[in-house]
Length: 166
Image (cartoon, rainbow, N blue to C red):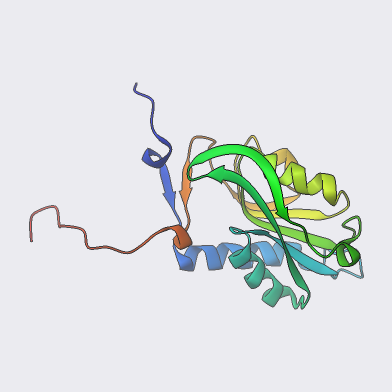
């Protein structure tokens, strides 16, 4: 068997699918916050966590949303995670009542950096891979470690020639 490139074992996510899965994550998180079931705020991990965070904030009626910018990929190559922008530390404190949202946990490096900053936060991702699962508290769908997820914000629609010609 030949070794596959990351894009050769792909899981393509449409806008409809990310919306459904983010809503499913919101339903799982509903009533689970430490303040009579509510969450104090949501912090989206940019950039992938922004779309799911928007949907979850709407579903759970959380009006305070901030971001933390962590860079852990250079195109499709994973590198050391580095915080580029922190959330409002006065708002998030040690993370109690804060819901951290990302699209995917892969190896867990990004979430580890954020968890070190906000140890009491609840970490939720829409998708999870086995190596990263220990770093996330809630998720919806698990995919194999060797699967590359193609998110709709990374894709463009284009014409594809039919199998039997035009």
